[in-house]
Image 1: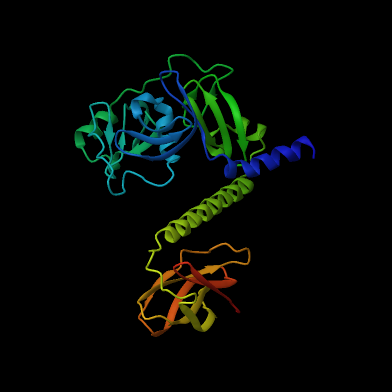
Image 2: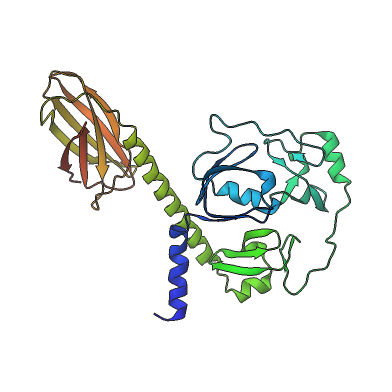
Length: 334
């Protein structure tokens, strides 16, 4: 395999394999193999080679704070149990949506919006999105702060004017560049870069759009697999029915619906004198669950019909019906 093709293969598989990375703290300490589990109003909950810890926002370089938030695996501040975010200070900007930008430094002001740098990078906010009139007036008249030192040969100037110092390109992807700089690590998509850089790295908008769609599809696949795993883990254990075969699938029908969904209708006979819980889960031809399935209750010695499971977009190969440790499989026809 030549160097060009090996590079392309590496680009294709990198998003699937890079599940952890290093975190650089302002103290100079480096935490290895970091996975951001969640975050709240004060910091990140992470897992790394040294164990599980909480890292405050102040310990992280300002330009990396938003980046690490985006790496959170599951929980976000909007979910139950999160701590409230600190109210905005005199140098912060709050928008109508509730977003708070910390330590704002104005870079450009036009008739309708203000562009600024903040702890998480840079942003542009329309004046209509600022609810407080005093804050609107403040930013309308704020003098822009220009960079102290003109950009050098190792610096990168984004299309919005933001300057990144001492840039080292670390990764080239179809939709943008990831680079290390004095403020940490940043990824910018090609539309935010100069035409010179777009041409140098052979930016193709169609290839970039396809790459982003593929990443989104892979992210959704991983999310669906996690949902299935959680659903299976939540399957409630029950008392041993006392027989080797507690249930029997007595009917099975499958239909392709006009909207592209696939519906499975089945019936189960309870062969015991106890109330049983069963779960029907559809699987593809590779033996992978397509969803968490549905849970049903079957009274003692009863036959329950019209249990249904609907699968979007993909025709399942088989239905597996679980009852405690017992499992029975049924092939599906469409």
